[in-house]
Structure formats: structure tokens, C-alpha cells
Figure (spheres, rainbow, N blue to C red):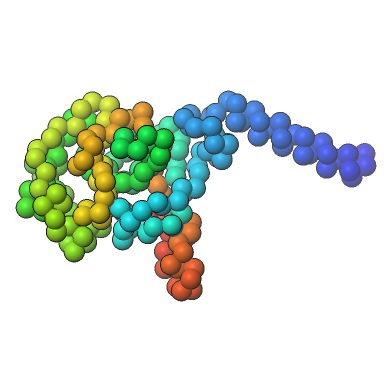
Length: 196
């Protein structure tokens, strides 16, 4: 066989394999994005400062969009979801409570099932307003999660529009791929790191 024929055959086999993977959707991804359907992961650009300082505006992180990632969410994990406040747009926040949990903020302390939750990712300087220090007790309904941004005073989240249905969850953020602040300063403190 000629080398050219081998290369063409290899490219055709790869295209057929990727196409079949896209159609079969082995990761159960609820998206038409080929990156997510073929690899189970996709990049996501942070649109605002709602998750600062954990995730900076314009940074890019990878989202695990597999069905397992959406089904096994734990409190404090960061998720990307279809925003109830802005239909058609994705948002990113931290899971504060899951289905059947009670949630409340009393004097600036987050209580889940009446137990205080340690939140080292929330900067007290960004949680001074009443809406960040007080939340009446709520019970998360079945099939939903309650989310909040780390930058409490500047986050449009579950405190305003309520619960996120599980069907709106796109995936779990797990890896910072690009951070403009790191690149521009040559510090590289945040890029290629897992998300806490």
C-alpha cells in the first residue's frame, strides 16, 4: 500500500470513529457540543466575578459533563448550569445544598441541615450586605440543588431565583485551564490547577 492510501484510510477511520462516538453519546452528555459528547468534557469561560476569588472573570476552566458528574454532586462543588434568571445562558456557582437539605444563612454563617458549614472560599470582605448575611430557612425540593457564588455581595444566584433543577445542570467544574491574570503577569499560580 502507498503511504498516502494509509494516511487517507487512517483519517477516514478516525472520522468514522469520532462520528460514531458523537452519535452514541457514551457519556450521556445533554449537549450537542462535539467536545462534550466525544470527550465528556468541555471548556467554559467565566462571565463574571460571581465566583471570585476562586474563579476569576475571563478565566477558562474545564467542565466534566458526564452523567456521573451531574448525578454525584456534593455540597461545595462548583457547577455550570442553565441560568434560571437568564434563559439560554450558562452560569457557574457552588452547590450549597442538595435535594431534601435545609439551608439558611444566620449572621453570615451558612447552615445546612442546621449544621454550620466552613466556607474558606468566601472572603468576608465580599459578604457584608444583608442579603449575604441572612437567608430565611429553605428546604431544597427533590430533583433540585441550591447554589451560591463565592463573591456573595456580587453574585446573582439561588438567593434571588431559588433552586436549580437537576435537568439544568451541565456539569462540574474541575480544572483551571487558562487565567488571563496569570498569563499577563507570568505568575502561573492558577493555571493547570484543580478547582477547590
